Amino acid sequence: MVWAGDGETLFVGAAGSGILRWAPSSGTQPQPWLDTDAHAEALAIDPGGDRLAWAGDKMSVLVDVESRAELHRWRHEGAVASVALGPTRMTSVDRHNRARSYDYIAKTGLPEREVDTLHAISIAAEGDGPWLATGGYGAIEVRGGAVPISIAMPDCRESPADLACADWEQRSIEEFGDEGSQPASYTDSSPDWLVHDVEFGPNGQMLVAGRSDGVVLVVDLAGATVVQRFEADPDGAVTVSVSRDASLIAVGGKSGRLDVFSRVDGSARSVQAHEHSIRDVAWSGPGQIATASYDGVAVWQIRE
Image 1 (cartoon, rainbow, N blue to C red):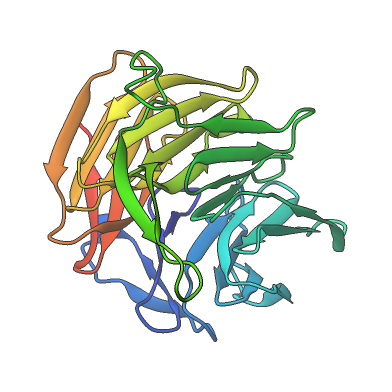
Image 2: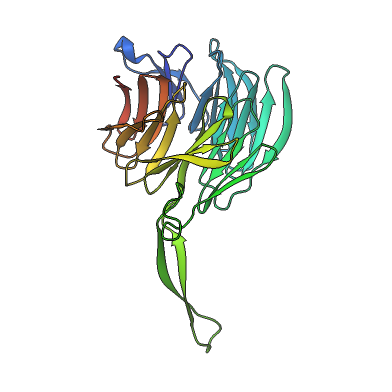
């Protein structure tokens, strides 16, 4: 789901194979816009609104918005999890943590890049910039700067003041060896969370991550540190989105709750937006956001 540059037109991946176009203020229903040969899991649009990229299955495709003509396509080895469009470049990242970039002005491919994260769940790429990020169990990894960034989740019992701290649980594990040998027992400590979503903020200065415990972290990329922490839907922060001026963060929760946090004063506003888990959120401007779930798409006005 992505808004066009005018802030009035919304493109949405359909339940089957296709992309819908919708102008919510017109009062009309979403209309079929483009047939696709796979479900469009991720959408992106360039800053000028002239090109749209969609990704699904093991492919990513670039199309011209006006003519809907296909401009570029390639296949990945793994399922594509994220696609980004900048002023000159399309980047798509698959779940094998491999990123492919295409300069659509020069019409040439760029060297493939890789990001290593154990059990990557969420993947993000910055439009024309160097950053790639993955989140999963145990850490958030960011590559693209002079020094790789790794944000590990500390144990809250040991570091309660750390903004990135996460609740941990202990469990007893019993392993059986060869036939006739005695079983071995030990205690394992592990976090009871995972990173559902990561997204870069404007100008590649920050990264926002949503976790399964409902915690949302803001990472300053220049300092490689967590600088803000917000408490969202306790059932899990499934999807996150940063407003265009980076002052607001929208969080779609597993319970269907939408939270909007102010990075300026820390205030929060919440609404039960859907009956089911929110799968995507997208800003059109400082005061309007779209949410998508299994029960449909909704547009919300954020009043000052």
